[in-house]
Amino acid sequence: MEPTRKEHDFLGELEIPNHLYYGIQTFRAVENFNITGIPISKEPLFIKALGYVKKAAALANKDCNAIDPKIAEAICYGSDQVIAGKFNQEFVSDLIQGGAGTSVNMNANEVIANIGLEYLGHKKGEYQFLHPNNHVNCSQSTNDAYPSAFRIALYLKMESFIKTFAGLEVAFAKKGEEFKEVLKMGRTQLQDAVPMTLGQEFKAYATTIGEDIQRLKNAQELLLEINMGATAIGTKVNAPEGYPELCVKYLAEEVGIPLTLSPDLIEATVDTGAYVQIMGTLKRSAVKISKICNDLRLLSSGPRTGLNEINLPARQPGSSIMPGKVNPVIPEVVNQTCFYVIGQDLTVTMAAEAGQLQLNVMEPVIAFAMFTSLDYLSNAIQTLIDKCIVGITANIDHCYNMVMNSIGIVTQLNPIIGYEESASIAGEALKTGKSVHQIAVLERKLITQEKWDEIYSLENLIHPKFITK
Image (cartoon, rainbow, N blue to C red):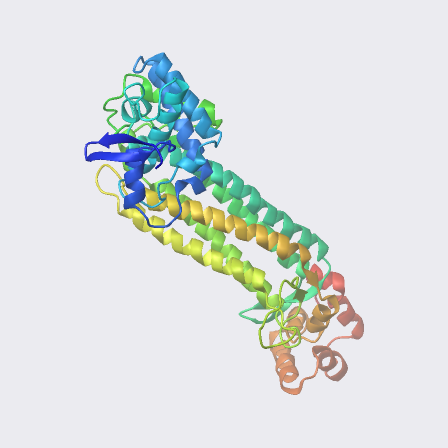
């Protein structure tokens, strides 16, 4: 049988396999919370952030004479190993759990304690020399350590997401330039409107994404204010004088981002408004991305009986019964991912609302919702770029012919022949199948061919200017 060590908490004793660096409280969490099947080891940035928090706390505690310098050195060593990702497999707590994140905090405390014990020449579990609670968790509570680590991890994850999102903006902007002279029909309410270019349509996608990137950056800044040093409810109980300021200073230096200490630690310990705002902004992005994917599916519909203005790259056979059918599978999968993210916005909203009195115990599900949303949407965006956007081509002649055969181009005649006459032409064209040109120029002789050519030149259709009688 595998050698074990005996560990205890106030609930009793357990035999812990000796190769494990986590201890009894993490072991209980694994038994209690088999919810998602996704352990925090799947979120390496969260683990790294926990390492940063524990190291900063040890440095601050040493400066405040709250722990022995040798103990602080061992905690810093263990934290550095965790930050480096060498013990990710030891972080086994489920992302969704009861206890407001206590299991995650204790998972970090136990792992770092046992790494530190070996550093000091002791065995795992010999906590009389370096204790998970007394030393690694000194001057802390789950209620400041967990949310501080979560905010740091979320900030870093958003950095990566924003870079991926910016890649989508660039991809659409490039297509906007490529298609800048491809004349097509604009549509409102799925009906013909007035001419535009395919380039203008794709450039608009780039612009709308760029706007959301800026909104995400603005919301991301809310994560820089943390409650480290608040301890249990924000009163700083069990923390030495000056510890919160020192801890946040060290934490900012270690992470390399401008973290600040909240001016009201009681408010900061209960408030989850930043998550609501960030998730709402992420939902906004998901809504826009999904709308764009709807457009791509419509624009590529057909090929014979749809709009067929663009061609999406063929990625796989589209039917088990209809030969030759190719479906827009990449926009479809992105749509579905966006639906998931939109749903998680409600999860975060309800979890934030469910906080009571001096603590919001629902923060683990907020973390799960936000981490998975950023991961899934980032993957979807990269898939959309690589497997769809860069390979889109335009059916240039088809787009042009649809414009010139459209009734919608009669709008350009309004300033010259008036709305009533234009409407009459549109009605006759719709009823008879004749072109606007045939009725206005050849039959009714309302304008000359020369004027028609001026109004409907490619340049004027792409960049309309006001043309009078």
